[in-house]
Image 1 (cartoon, one colour):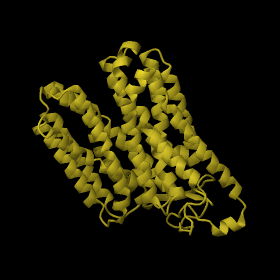
Image 2 (cartoon, one colour):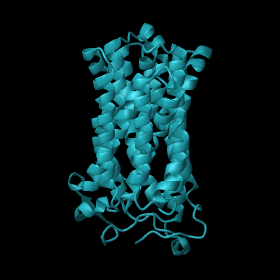
Image 3 (cartoon, helix red, strand yellow):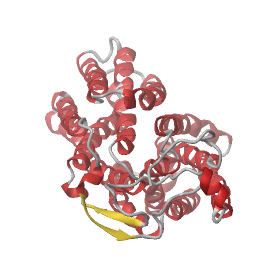
Image 4 (cartoon, one colour):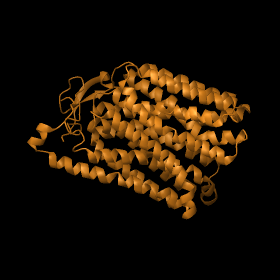
Length: 428
């Protein structure tokens, strides 16, 4: 059954909408709250250079693993159950790590947190596809914007909250935001159960699960993501994009400090870089779906990235804020990647497979970029080779952009269909 629009398109989906938005707000907060508190964590838990490096590698590493694993879980248990499990992992991990007294338990429970949010990264696009196929752009704009808000706000609050209480409260308080995700989804699940068997509701309802290549309702196509040019293209695109972002979040403050910028200004530059993700996150999902060739928008954002990289390398002390502005606006490529998950899939199942594969492979590739960036500087004594890697990341990203530009879908890689009770039609 195909998707279609009703006269009251938001009715019956408010719980899902709130659940998606609150989940997006919490996804990065637990990651970005820790770096500003590392000074306290060094003394109390025993962090050193090696364990700090391991902490920095945990998000992309765990996101990659669970990016590949989550579509299997979704196929077996369904989107909503997998989401609930992800929230439980995130809440438990945040609370226990905040109570940890040593570095290795802290790292272990941080891995649990990242597992929960790695699953959350994957389930959000298919949830949008399932509940809002008629509002993909608007809902994606909302959740990507809130993801950027969480990324920017939590490090800004980290030190002030720790000053009023302690670092444990500052880190653990974000578990409450994660817990709030369960409330609207519980309300949505209750409403969905009540709507089952309501013939009048079915007559007025909308099918949130589209058909894939004519597959029978109640059957799920087996998608060979490894054979799909769309899946590989999006994975390559996301790898190139995220590599640049991780380098900035890891190295922008120490790089600027080494060039003579004072530490406070260098930290503010990173916060400014993160905040610039807000306007582009709101713009991209409303603009790009109307374009016949999304690569035009991607090329514009790539030019912003390139200007930022070159400016910071050639003239870090003169025009610092201009170069950071350019790089920050380049973050529109991340919003584009999340949007393309749903623009290059026809069904909820296709969206989950494409989301999991692209994020799994993409984050695996991106995770090594900050390590190379720093290692090349240590080996050569210069930043030239390090910034050259950012140019390579741009080329990788644009290669993926060329592959995802044509209007083709992950479902084109379907090899057969198998029954699944969890991928049926969602009724209002």
